[in-house]
Length: 230
Image (cartoon, rainbow, N blue to C red):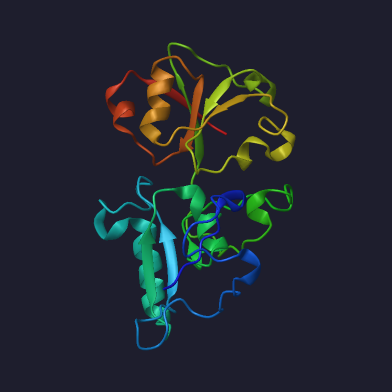
């Protein structure tokens, strides 16, 4: 592979072996790996990530409930190109960098927003969804020593909510709630479930939003939390 790199703002100048930009030949187009020098990958590529028990995690049996389901579905379909499941723990990249660069074809598991109600939601625009594979409750956990009475959406105005990075937030705006869209709440976005519950126990956030199956160690070992469905 031959690379021609341009200098920032044309600098430095006068180096031996340099090529004037106007005289530089346009790069040839075509595959990076040519026949006889390697194997071109044309299989169907799927991506998922860890720390989403019981659905996906390499520490779980067969990679988790939905990983096994997807794997078996692909084996049943038996596409001629073959299938590969990749693990990338930057969940945001699953819907942005990786598909935009053509590196993956599908990502799982993701919740589907109510696209009839929120058509401008990012996930409603460029993506196709399968039929639902699993339905879960999204719960909001609070510290029992600092209770929050929730009778209407207005009770959360001014509160700080924790939702892990890469997890959807469309539930916070649906039904005219508009907590995030209109800045009615402050939203913390750490990397892991444990980080959110640590912040809750330390009094840095008022509540944690997570699905009913996420059970960090702190929630088992720490003081009790209350919960209510969003």
